[in-house]
Amino acid sequence: MKDAQFYYHIIRLMIKSNNGDTSVMIKNKTAWVLYYSNSGNTKNLAELATTVLVEKGWEVETTQLTDFEQMKKPGLVILGTPIHFWTIPHMAKQGIAKLPDLSNAVGFVFATFGNVFSSGVTYELAKALEKRGTTVLGGASLVCPHNFMSETGKRLGDIYPEFGKDQPDAKIREEYINAIKYIADKAEKGDITHFDINRLKSPNPFI
Ligand SMILES: Cc1cc2nc3c(=O)[nH]c(=O)nc-3n(C[C@H](O)[C@H](O)[C@H](O)COP(=O)(O)O)c2cc1C
Image (cartoon, rainbow, N blue to C red; front, side, top):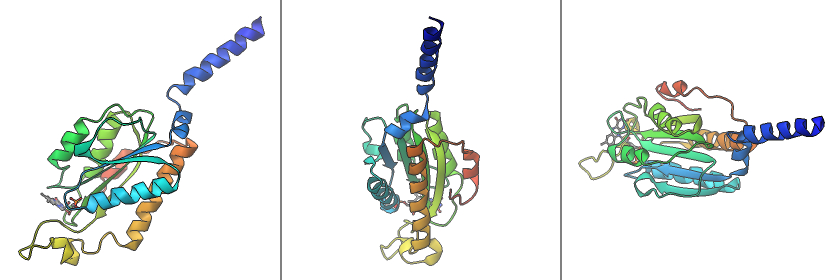
């Protein structure tokens, strides 16, 4: 009888520890790729992340934050926005404010900017996900073509290298792909080591 009680206790402990446990994440290979984009830079990187995840066998829901609807709960969330005047664009903030509880998911955040000033947007995005219970494991700020329009009707970043022409280049794209793979691998293995999102405050984080 004593043995039976002992095993009952162990099983209860196992069930209890499973509640907030990483094994839930390993089984949940659904990812959300949420982005906000006006001229396509952030959308292209969101779609690149989607391709990488699909190739790794993830079921992926990719959507503009403004079109967000409730979907199957994810094990992985990727959130990306451009930087508008040193902060998250207003419309993106409104979309983020509507996000549901995202506990039991790991996260990766990224910001795109036109090489003027990156500020702490990546960190702000990480904070927004952590507020919903997501464990953020990394983030990146990526220089992209600045999308202010020039007099010729082209984006500044389609003309001037100093405004992000031809960025992100092949090397940065590869780093970005590797970062997405790294986060997905961690989610799959349940290797959810702590990541200090304060690291994302550095001017050009890439983790
Ligand atoms: C209103 C506005 C404000 C911007 N502010 C900044 C900024 O503060 N720093 C910067 O480097 N780029 C800035 N940019 C450039 C964009 O962040 C950059 O081009 C971004 O990649 C655009 O993403 P999208 O194509 O997904 O919309 C700004 C662009 C717009 C339209």
